[in-house]
Length: 140
Image (cartoon, rainbow, N blue to C red):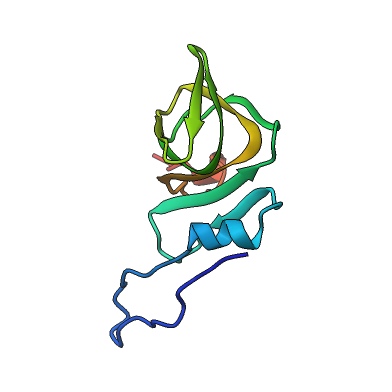
């Protein structure tokens, strides 16, 4: 469920304009028991990906490593632990954390759950190319 400002269309020339995409406070109020991705950035032509995610109380995102993307994580509501190879670090509403690419990280929600925003560079789409073979080689 999203709360968007869709009443302000862009200029006639089609140039991109800033706009409010989501009110995270209203999002929490509309879906207090929802889990997983509550909102996703889906604007065409964007260079970023962003998600608002809710982990239920005492649940977790298992430790994993993102090899390619740095991620910013902003806790919107609740609390929990960021689990890294160096131990756990308490996160609470307002905590802004940089997760550099290549680092192992996991999240464990506290007793009130954990809702957070992640922002990172958009992953490029897959490119399908012809297979290299005899027909694709140049004959000299």
